Image (cartoon, rainbow, N blue to C red; front, top):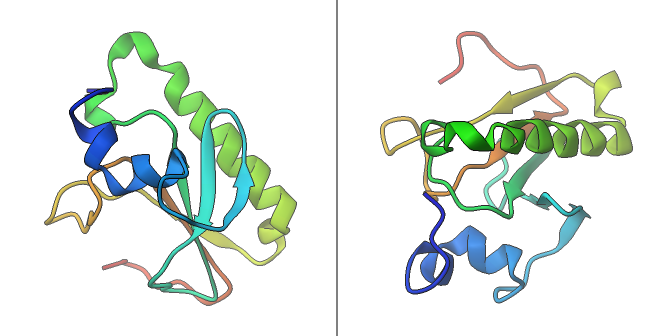
Length: 122
């Protein structure tokens, strides 16, 4: 659930980055999300698409806010095209929970590109 005051938006690392309370180099930004480089890259190109709205996991987005996902994918696709990643191949990843590999409890999409991806992942 989105919390505005006295909750996640005050303490969440990604909310603070989005609000520019913590410096980060935005490589792309629109009204829906920001894109930054991952501080621990797992590929030559490793970016995070961070939505401005705070939800910890995709299952927490209310059913009356399905446009959230449309907007996130539009931002992701716009960035992929801007960077020309479609010609290099890429992988999109959304983790949830500690066992799922999520380290910041705020939905975000990892965009990985620039190397051969293996299957199965993880």
